[in-house]
Amino acid sequence: MSRRGMGELEAAVMEALWSAEDGLTPREVHDRVADDLGYTTVMTVVTRLWDKGLLRREPEGRSFRYRPTTTAADHHSDRMRAALAKAADRSAVLASFVSQLDESDRSLLADLLDDEA
Image 1 (cartoon, rainbow, N blue to C red):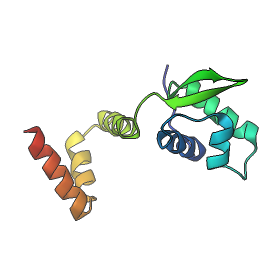
Image 2 (spheres, one colour):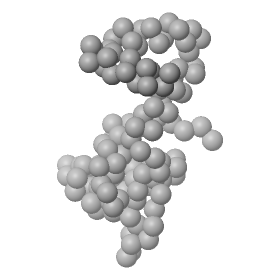
Image 3 (cartoon, rainbow, N blue to C red):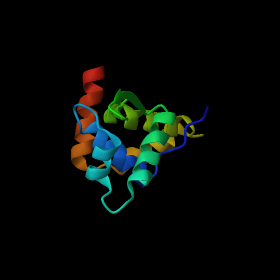
């Protein structure tokens, strides 16, 4: 099954969950992310993220407590790898990516590559 990318609300929900040490209930997600949205909207987003395999859940009272199945860093690096894998010219994509990094990110990338060598 192909996974769709995250929309803005899905990304906000995931950021809230990644920052929560003990996971969150849908009510807690709603309180952190979207006071201007209905609870059922947030509940739908949380359920869709669970359906996509991005969250795991365990019963808590009449609801569930949700936790991410991966770290934020692993999730974002997986997305970067997937985007690179789709490129016809990986070298051009990597060159373009690196050229758009600021100096501190270039330095960090160089240090990380040196550590891997």
